[in-house]
Amino acid sequence: MRHFGDQQGDQSWDEQLRYQRLQQRQRLGAMLLGAYCLGVYCLGVYCLSLWSGGSGAIAEEQPHIPQVYLAQNAPFVVQTPTQYLQTQGSPSQRATSPAQSLDAAKVLDRLATLQVVYLGETHDQAEDHELQLAIIQALYQRQPKLVIAMEMFQRPYQSAIDRFLGGEIDTNTLLRQTEYEKRWGFPWQFYEPIVQFAKQKQIPVIALNVPTEVTRKVGRKGLTSLTIAERRFIPPLSAIEMGPEPYQTKLRELYDSFHSRKGSQTGFHHFFQAQVLWDETMAERISQILQQQPDRLVVVLAGQGHVWEGHGIPRRVARRLSRSANLQQSIILLTPDAELLQQLTPTSADYLWDAMRSPQPIQPPENTTEPPGKLEPQAVDKSNPKSK
Image 1 (cartoon, rainbow, N blue to C red):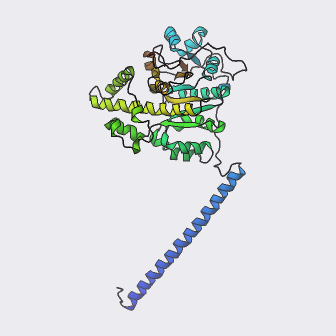
Image 2 (image 1 turned 90 degrees about the vertical axis):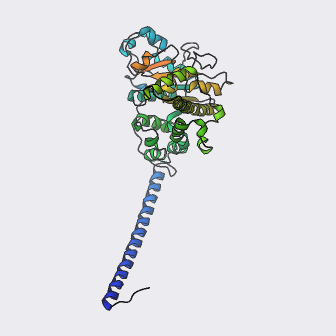
């Protein structure tokens, strides 16, 4: 109930009412003006995108993508693990020993005939990403039907990658919609030239990784703790195989070092399940690509731990495609550090690809190709524990 006071009180209430109405009119006017300005802005963006040649696509300034494979200062030292173990020299020493260093162009010729090439990286090492770009560019020159499969993106966000490659969203929107900083976090400038090159050449980019929430839960509670909804972006549990034993042993050493050898057996069991789930999920997606597009060469960007000895991803791809007699894969370790080299065996990888410059540059492929049989990468063979 309104209280009627004296005249001064009524005048004060009326003044407040008029003031409130004035505020409402001002807010309404501001909203209408804002809507008008937004409409003009959107129309301007749309017209600009049409003028730039797109169909409503975002016109984004294209960054410079270095053409590494053509540069005269861009050759690399390429060796098999056996050659390295025989030489045991520094990259500069190996570069000046032609008998112990392979012709990078010929190796690329052979890689371009395969189905999968793994570029095993150290995530925070800039040189590795420069090498990845150089190798991808060189392979594209030889085999334009490429697919770039990346551990750096998680599977639920594939649609955002597709929209970016199609010119529908810009880089900032891609990073926001894929939650890149939260879910990967290594500097975007490491991977941006690769993704921009893919966009320029219309090379598909495929998200391989498991959602972070899923791997964390498995690491805490195990595979069987996952709900039906949480299993959406992973293989069926029946299709996930634990092992092999050497892989488990290596990860046990890693786990014990994390926990000062005080971790529990259950804790390690869940940790190993999470790692295997990671590998199996990426292997499943790579296998699906090869089944759907068998004429493609899939270049996989992943951490070295996922490809070392073939235990992580490569063997699991081979298991899924065991009926494909022609499946050939090759594992490349990029600029492996001293600690990794101390553990090197002849079966650790097919090639070591060093960022150290060698005397001869990588050139685009000529019409002639290397005769079959030379520099043949080792195919992954599940039945042979020493093959990858």
